[in-house]
Length: 479
Image (cartoon, rainbow, N blue to C red; front, side):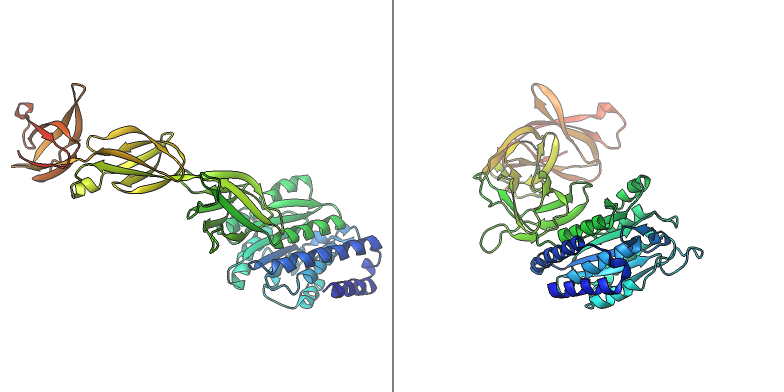
């Protein structure tokens, strides 16, 4: 491959007068670039398929002189090098879409965009030939072209990491909205990241293009070449990542929890995984792109997070994240009656006033080591209980088992169950005002039933009945 690259370079020097003046230093730098690309893409064969779509501006303004020729000529030469370097690596595919080249400025064709070289094609010479025949000609339908990129990736099919690199020298000229088009590509998870390489963009346009993706403005042919090669190298780097979730002993044994990698810059979701230990008992290894800085959120209860984590390209990155977890459970002490009213009682666990989870009797929930509050929703409830969870241990909240009250009514009634707390009457719950039978799971204690017939319109018809509930016992009252 290295020989074919050098041969291509020499041939291009003889047959292209504009290129003859490129210096020996440029030649050496291009050779170094090819060697770097060779190493990077050899490593890339070990990872999942990566697809790079180059979206190239061939509008009329690309005819402007720039360094060794025109802006378009420079972009062509750099793409020739990239195409040669990408050739032959089964896990890296590229495609080229060009806009602004099929119609003249006078025609103002705002749909002038075409996929000139699709993904999966194995003939780099054909790609270079097609590129060599293109002449800058028309307007800049950037937003429309970005919208068409979604179809370019979908035609290729299959699972892959998709990246978009835009090479342009000017703003949208068709009243489209490039920022919105790029945002849709990200929101629909079609691409991982748009990269914009500007060719001498004025300052006012730099702000506009920054919303599309990561903008790098270039001011010379050498700078464009350097930045494009760097972006491609970063995209294709065989970068792996291992997330060690450390237990209370500092060992990477915590697992079986979802986690998310967000772009640290804009918080968009880049990857989502369910943490797994491999067959050797170590955290599983995954491939990620090194072009982002990540915020890592592990969806434990409560979540734990590390921010602004960078990945070294072509390296195995190990991230240690403390996530010691223990268990919380809720139990009744005594005889537990098998009744739906008992089974539906929940224990709600809070931290700093924020509810995290609700567990039933005899259930366990995994929590990050720390201090929590709990409300057990019996009648009456236990509120503000303290719960301390330690790594690798189970913390248990225990309350007396409730008893059961079964009410049988001779007529529909309106009323409430009251209890005595600190010599005060406190309402526990209301009676249902429809139906003739009702059951309640109540904590042990003395209660007062206040009620009247539903059809009565006088408070003088209020009746009261005192009763006592014992743990694990049932009583029946006829009213």
